[in-house]
Image (cartoon, rainbow, N blue to C red; front, side):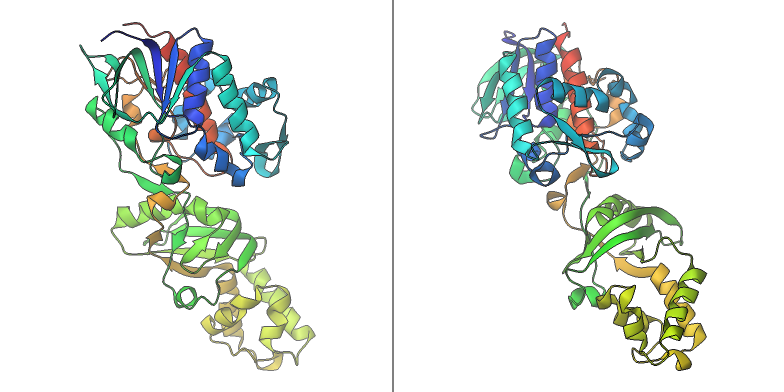
Length: 422
């Protein structure tokens, strides 16, 4: 097969666009293929439509927020890290601003600004773009990449192919897991796929009754416990009760630990717990709430607690502690009030899983990293085959971490694919 192109990039998301830019910048003749009708669809809805392009944390802290094999990225960050991403966009005329927890957004607050600029740069650098071009498979000849076959039957030759086809999350943007089969054809292992950064599901009575539905909790802690009583992870921030379970930033961050615990221990559910007063110890909560009751001794416990606890949760907390909603200070059983303090610090919720991988923001699992050269993103099994982005077994928390991994691996793959020689 004649090599029409030096590099073919499959997938026009954040990783693929960056791979195309890097490959063309380093002198390659590049073709970018995408099965959809437009590029950067997932990028266009990221960050609530504002596009959180990276996170400005120091490198070690950044990697700590990519619990799914983040350490693998040290090599790619040597080529293109979060500081380089900031500089890259600002050199293209996109001014960025830093928000809470290091999140970096365009000053315009519009993801379209980022997508249009990236696509514009791809075009400016002479990359040929073909949308509506669904790939059937990657062709291998003589133990190396020889080209790409489209579903239309067309064969296109190349020296190197970069798989940037995404995972299985948010399939409406085109991420339907196509790349895994191409990787397996080359001999690669695909680690088990699972949803991450996804809402948790529960059938607790207060969930199924919908009595807490829509309740947002601000600045609380959420912990995941394994069946042996060991805390697996704790995240502090905001969450919300839904009609099916828990959502919001800290619930999403805990989701991968719930999935892994359910699988590891072979159980039907695990406990997560909410700490409603994370700045106070149990004894402080006990004395503080009791003093409030003492200050207004004729007031019912329910009304005493209204000022410091979410009102919808108070009846559930009091019932769990064996206390009447109408009990006043003089009649408060101290042991039950201590039980209330314990519940405020550790309100248990049994969760039995998460929403589906299609409902997740991020796919866990993917192409096994032991089969990838970390410094180049080239396959160790098939010369000329490169991977980047969410198709790899790398996943981070929301907050600019996954897109940073996508841009970094995309740039690294593009740079090295450009210099690939048969």
